[in-house]
Image (cartoon, rainbow, N blue to C red; front, side):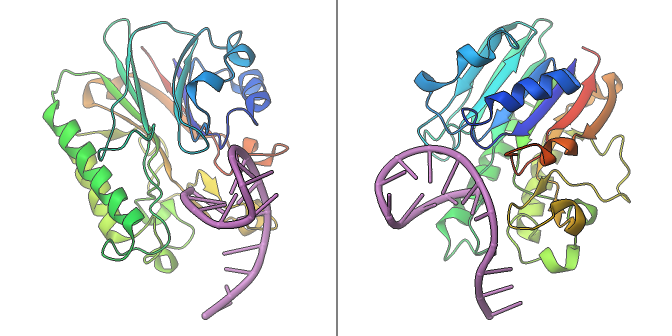
Length: 262
DNA sequence: ATGGTTGCCGTGCAA
């Protein structure tokens, strides 16, 4: 299974780019975030030929996640978090029992202080709820995959400058601690760092606000693919498809690709 | 220290 996660930043605007993605790297399963469309308006017609199986949870203008697949699923779901119905989680189960969870974690605003920034407080609460959820079902036999835009770049080489980003939301110690607690709660394995060493800079997002994203390369690794230990031996490869960041009218995120024997 | 860009919607807000 070739699994791809991509913050597409409007699935209606960029449905043509999904076609190009399929032409170039042929995902079997594509997990999207920031679809920015309510379910009634999801562009099923444009995507049905590429992905006959689709599960979308969206809302108007903001957030929204979707799982598109060539492989059938046997169940679909998705929870609400922090008491809000803001379409940040979708899940499916494949034959054989492998669960896939697609998340869009709140970005958290600009000010990294939960006392004065409600959006940052929401982000921390969201991560705490995810950790409780993940830990409650932890089981060494379980075959689960967690992907998405987690809006945190945890390691020094997940950002262009560790020192300069320590007080920038997405790389502050308080968020990184929360993400590590989530990861520890089910012994989640980072499928991308499983193949690409920690010593290597690796990013999946580059701001629109730079003249030449590749030349300045001020990126962050915000998009992640994790698997439970029972799936570690099934991992076959991982990469960031940064070519897509150069496409016409690109998303500011690049697709993250993981190959798994399932 | 500042501003830089994008999408959706409606001319502001979130990223």
